[in-house]
Image 1 (cartoon, rainbow, N blue to C red):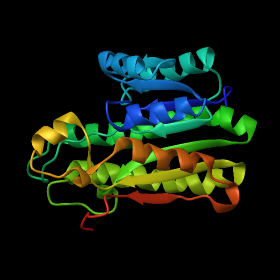
Image 2 (cartoon, rainbow, N blue to C red; image 1 turned 120 degrees about the horizontal axis):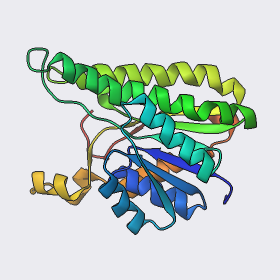
Image 3 (cartoon, rainbow, N blue to C red; image 1 turned 60 degrees about the vertical axis):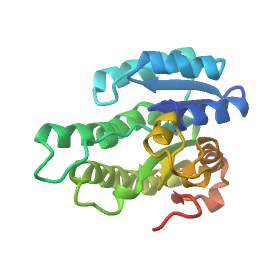
Length: 233
């Protein structure tokens, strides 16, 4: 698969790094996109032969520039993984209009703009994968999730709309809901009393995401839930 390119938007030390490692091991050329250039550099050190493209997904011009560079350097993106997600948690009384808008920009608008950048080339080759990393908040709005839940719901509906349009064109759109706490150094420090099985292993999440990209079109999944076996839901 040396001719295939995977772009990971929102590449951080947890899932983003695991996605990069999984697709790199499978022979893909991997592009990493995120705001923090230092964080991207650390992933590149851990996963060799990956390529870093710093950008803020809430700013259209930066997304355009990043994908133009990807297409020039690596070629057509076969698999787009939209992993960017952010939101200030709080109720309608606690979040500001700016907080609300920023959550929407990162989760929904950034996804919309990223897909627009890869879609013409995917259409030209008649195939492609768009995998969007979601959250349980896309289905239900908790009292203190006013900004995040509404943004994730917008993202999920966008994914569904795209799946219905693009499936007949040979482009697989899927939405992976992550319901649990990712196993990271900071989450371990925040929850020191939790056993290993409480946390979600990023490498295992990456296995499922890779599987979505390899499904035969006769049995495509749209929405997949991932959660620890002991999660209450």
